[in-house]
Image (cartoon, rainbow, N blue to C red; front, side):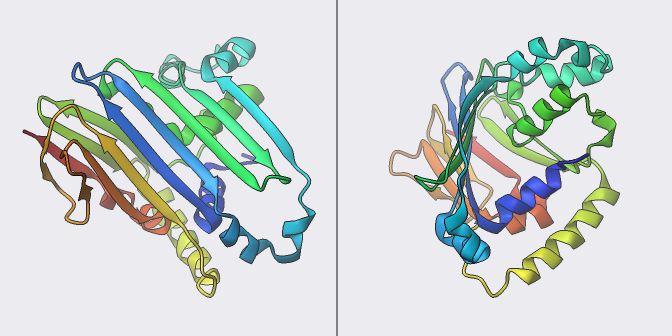
Length: 241
């Protein structure tokens, strides 16, 4: 792959802030948004004199289904199981804005769902769109984790599982080395969960989660480096009243 998923994560790790915002309605439908934006102060430390030389401008919006339709000749070459995976993203919307003039570099990925279990692993959306566009083999991907969501009655779970232990261990070592190279920089690399529920929160599995006054929303923050080196540590369970 010319552009691997892990390289994308390293770029995010170096200078980005991620926010995952989830709204669940009383009927278990809702919306989820995965927003990543470049922290300009962090990026400026890394880019140095190159920071002022940027000229890029891009403002693009697309629905994942458009890629399936436009590059259908590539799509139908995938196995049925791979097509099913891509179809989980069919209604996912992507907005990419990169403006050197405004110094705004942001990607916002959103999905409306009928039930929590329908939520796709949005962090992989752009990667999968490229696979279809350029006819990349899905088996060549080096994804090593999967994020899914479950709502069973009053119990909600954000579940992260390692899907390939060998790739995980290899990329974990790369991440550690990358973190060492950035140790002398004062970088903002936060990953924030903002979850809104239809009922009051009774229990949260993370002691550092902040619950709002009406007890229907929580916020949890950790470092992107923590997520890359131990994705499973970001698992979350919430019990509603």
